[in-house]
Image (cartoon, rainbow, N blue to C red; front, side, top):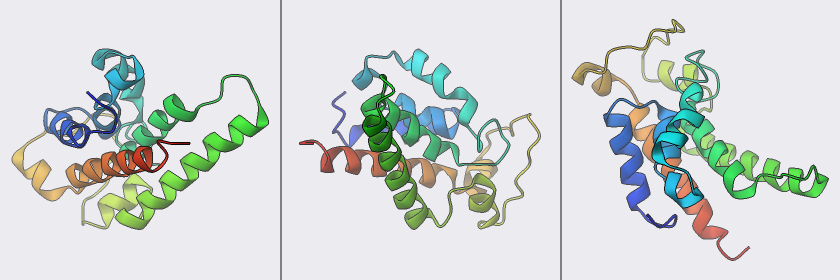
Length: 157
């Protein structure tokens, strides 16, 4: 799949609907674009769902964007300028995410929709009620959209 394709957004939403966590859904939608298999990307991002390990900290969908930012802009040589560029990208993505969703923390995103944010490590069963009451499918879609927009805006740089 082309990394500049709207199909990536649909893929992220589809993956979430199949039971993958929010971080996995965002990341795996772009797996092939970074030379990784879907299985590899699902493993790399698996610990970041539900606000990092279901601790309800930074939203997993946002973490998914940050993982992708590392693949696109991450530094490998310890160069201060490269680190700065990566951190600037992550901060910009976080700003956009917060602007569009009202918060960056999983607990805040859920409580804003009246959902009790359990930190029990056992995930909830994915039922129609689960999907109906949670903002997560839309947040996954929005995170994927933010990443796609960012990629398109920075294609020439």
